[in-house]
Amino acid sequence: MESGRDWLLDIFKYSDTMTYLKPEQTFGRIKFMLRRKFEVTRFNPALVEKARKNTERILSAGFEAIDFNFNNSVERMLCNRIKWTSGDYGWFKRPEKLWVYKLNYFDWIFDEKLNLDVAEYAILDWICKNADSRAESWEPYPMSRRLISWVRWLKKNEKDLIVSTVNCISEAIECQVGRLFKDIEYHIQANHVMTNLQAILVAVDYLLSQNFDLHKDFKKVVDELINQLNLQFFADGGHFERSPMYHAEMMEAVKDIKDALDRLVKRPQVSHIVVMEMDFTSSLCAKKLARMKIWLSKLTHPDGKVAMFGDSAAVAGKIKNEPKVMIELLEESGFFVYRKDPVYFVLSASGPSPSFQPGHSHCDALSFEMSIGNKRIITDTGCGSYQNRDIRDHCRKSLSHNIPQIEHFDQSQMYDFFKVGARAQVITKKYDQSRSLLEVLVIDRYGQYFTRKVLFGENYIEINDKLSNRSMTGAFISVLHLSDEVKNIKTKAKDIAAEFEVEGYKFVVNSHCRYRVSSHTYYKDFGKAAEGKKIVFNNCEGSEITYVLRWQKA
Image (cartoon, rainbow, N blue to C red; front, side, top):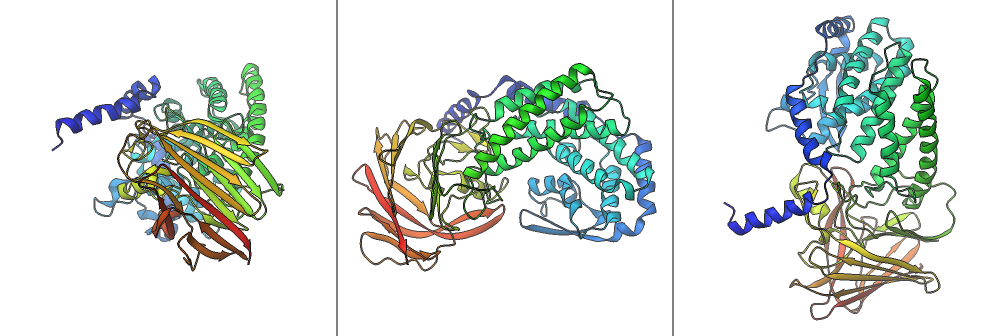
C-alpha cells in the first residue's frame, strides 16, 4: 500500500506530465473512449455474409498454415483459425499488443511465399470475424495500417480477383475509413495522426476510383494534413519525435500521401477548391520529403542502419553520395553529426520531444553513437519492447545511455511505458569549427547541470563531462556502451579502459578516472536482445570526467 508521501509524489509526477498536454489530448481522450464504447460502427450483415460465401469458394486456402513472425516472436496458425485480437489467445498465452497490432496491419500479405488465395481468405476471414468497431482490431492505428495494406494489395492483384471479392473488400474499406474519419487520434498526436491521415487519403483515392461517394469531411482532412506537415517536421527535415526509426516511417508516409494527392486531384468527384488545396499540399509534401531524405542520410551509420536514439531499432536508413567529410549541428532537431573517414559520430542534443507527446523519448540527451569503417562500435540501447515493463524501463533510463549522470538518478522522469514527467532540457549547444569543439549543456529534472565537451582530433575524440549545481547524492559517472561488434577487449594498463581491433583499426579508450567494465543488454531489433560490454567511468570525489577514444591503422 502506498504511503501518503508516494501519493504526493504521484500527484507531482502526473502534474508535470499534464502541464505539457494539449486540450485535445486530455478532453479528447475522454471523448474518444466514450465514442469507442457507445458510438458503434458495424459491418452490414449482408457484407459479412458476402465475405463468408467468398471464403467457401476458396475453402482449401483456410487450411494453409501461416508463420507470423513479429518482434522476433513466431506464431503458426491456420488461415481459418487466425486470432485477430488479444482476447482470442487466453490470458497466459497472450502476445504483446504490438504483436497483435502487426498481425492486423496486414503487411505480411505481401510475402512472396504467400499464395494469393491464402491472402484473399485471410482478408475475408477478418471481415467475417471483426464486424464490430469496439474490437481491438478496429483501433485507429492498426486500422490505418490495414487500410493502406488492403488498398495496396487490391491494386496489385485486382486483375486476378473475382468481382465479388473486390466489391466485398472495397465495402469493408469504405466502412472502416468512415469510422476513421471520426477516430483520428488527436488524443495521442504525432505519428499516429499522420498515419491516420495517410490511410484516409489512400483509401479515399481508391474508393473514388471504384465510384464510391466522396466523404463529406474530406476537406477537413486535407486542412488538417497541412497543419500536421508544418507541425511535425523541423526546418532541418527531422521528425519532431526525434526517433530515426519513426522518421524513416514518416518519410514513407509523406511519400505515400503525396502520391495519393497527385492521384486525387484528377478525380472528377473532388471540387475545384479542394483540388487547389491538394495541389498546394502536394508541393508542401515534396519540400518536406527533400529535407527528410537529407536528414535521414545524416542520421545513418556507414553500415546503412539508423542511429538508435529514442524508440529506434537499427532499421535501414539512407546513404547516398554522402560526402567523406560532413560536420553539422542540426539546431532544430537537436543532433550533431561528424562524418570523417574512417569515423562516423552522432550525438543527441535535445530533451524529450515533442513536449506534449514525448512517448518515444529516452533519457538520452548527450548520448552518442560511433562507427569505425562500417562497424558500429559505440551504441545506444535501442528499443526492446512496448509492453514488457522491465525491458521498457531498461531501455529508457539514463544508465542505458552514453551520458554523464548521478548514478541511479534519471535525467528525465520516465514512467508507465510512454509517459514523461519532469524532464531534462538542453540549455545551449554550439560547435566551434576553429577548435573542432562541440559543447552541449543539459539541465536534468533535479536542476543539476551537465556540460559535455567533445574535441575532435585527427585520430581521436576526447569527451569531457562536468557536473555543477549538484543536488543529489551519489557517484558522478559517465557511461560508454560498446556494441557486440567489439570482440576480445583487453585492458593493459591502469589508464587504458579498453583496447580492441575492428575494421582494420586498433582502438583504445583512455582515461585517468576510475572505471569498471561489465556486460550490458541492448536491442538492435525489436524484441531481440544483443550483448555488449560497457565502461562506467566514475569520479566520486570530484565533478569532472574525461576519456579519450583513439584509433590507428592496425
